[in-house]
Amino acid sequence: MAEPVEPEYGGERLVTSSADDVERAAEAALRPKKLDEFVGQRVVRDQLSLVLQAALARDASPDHVLLSGPPGLGKTTLAMIIAAELGTSLRVTSGPAIQHAGDLAAVLSSLEEGEVLFIDEIHRLARPAEELLYVAMEDFRVDVVVGKGAGASAIPLALPPFTVVGATTRSGLLPAPLRDRFGFTGHLDFYDAAELERVITRSAGLMGVDIQHAAAHEIAGRSRGTPRIANRLLRRVRDWAQVRGDGRLDLKAARAALEVYEVDPIGLDRLDRAVLAAVCRRFGGGPVGLSTLAMTVGEEPDTVETVAEPYLVREGLLGRTPRGRVATQAAWEHLGLEPPPGAWGAPLGGTLFDGADGDAGTPQ
Ligand code: ADP
Image (tube, rainbow, N blue to C red; front, top):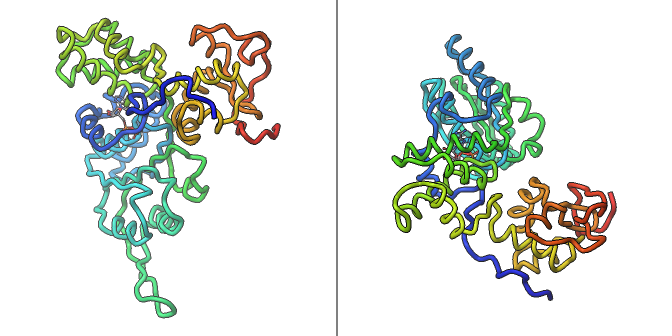
C-alpha cells in the first residue's frame, strides 16, 4: 500500500458546502428576508418575483416552486423569502425526514390555507410519499387510508390551497411526474466573486463589524462560489481579528486567518491539495483509479469522489478519464510543480474526458 503523500486529512472541513445544526443557527441571523436583499441569481430572482407578484395580485397561492442547485447557494433562504413575501408562514420538512406516506399525509392535512410547505432534499422522498404528494399538489387532496388489508378504504380529504417549495441538489433524480407538478423551476448557479463580496459585506454588517473591501475580496475568492462558505470563512476571519489581530477585518486578518485554517487562495483545503499532490507527485499526473488515489490520501473513495473532486473538476484542476483521474496543467501550476514530459497535464498531454468513472477501465 502506498504511503500518504500528505498528512492524513482528519479535521473538520471549512470549505464544505453542507451545514450542521450549530451552523444553521449561526446562518439564521444572516439570511436575507426579502427578495431584494437576496444577492445575485438575477434570473431566478426576477422570475420568482413575477410569480409572487402575480399570485399576490390574484390573491391566490402561487404555483409550486422547485429550486435546484448545489448545497449552500440559497434554496432554503429563497423558500423562507417566498413565504415572507406572500405574508404567510412556512412549514419545513425534508425527504429523509418523511419515513412513511402517512407522515406526509399528517403534514399536508395540517396545512392552513395559503401556507408554504418547504420540502428539502425532495429527491429523497420514498416512492409512496412521492405518489401521495403528486395528488396533493395537483388536486389538493390526500387519500387517508383507514383499516388494513382487504377491508382498507381510502377516504379523500380535501386540502386548502397551499404552495410546495421543493429543494433538490439532484434535479436529475426527480421522477418526471413529480417534476411536472412544479409550475416554476429555478436553477441556482455558483456565485461570482463580486456577488460573494456583496454577501460578505452584508453579513459583516449584520454581525456588527466593518470589513475592508480588500478583505471581503480575499474571502470571496476562497469561497468556492458558495455563500454558505463565504459566511463561514468570514466568521473565522472575525475570530482571528478578535483574538490575534486588532479587531479590524482587513486584508492581513483575512490572509492570516485563512492560512491558519489552510484554505488556499483559490479555496482549496488540505484534502483537495492532498488529492492533487498525490496525482501529480505520486502518479506522475495520472491516470490513477479512484480507490488507489483515496488510499494514497488516507480517505474513503466516497469522500474523495463527493467531497474533494467536484470542486477540483469544476476548477479545471482534475480531469476524469476512462482510465482514472488526471492532473491538468492548471493543477501542476497551482502546486508550483513542473509536469514531467508526457504527463497528462503537460502541454499536448492528451484529451480530458469528463464524467467517466475512473476505475472501470472501459473507454466510453
Ligand atoms: P441551501 O438551502 O441551498 O443549502 P441556504 O439557503 O441554507 O442554502 O444558504 C446558506 C447560507 O448562505 C445562509 O446563511 C444564507 O444566509 C446565505 N445565502 C445564501 N444565498 C444567499 C444570497 N443570495 N444572499 C445572501 N446570503 C445568502
